[in-house]
Length: 99
Image (cartoon, rainbow, N blue to C red; front, side, top):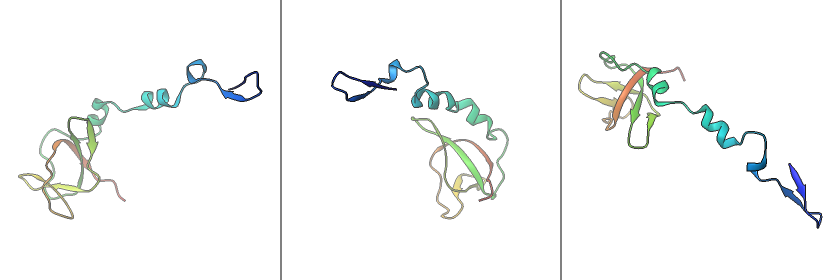
């Protein structure tokens, strides 16, 4: 909403005076909780060996999905393409969506 001051300049009404939701409030209401993310992944039982999967990991900031396919080798998680070991706290896995 625009407000005009005495000189005729248009001023933007401060967000705290608006009746609509701010973008930040809307985003906060749509954020996924940790439990919702956990529920979207398997985390009990043994992961499939040598099959590409998505990994849900966690660090001191929060949860995140590793952006590349990974696989379980019966000893540790590794990237499918590079074979590098995943050094993260893995909370769960799920079948990789087709690209």
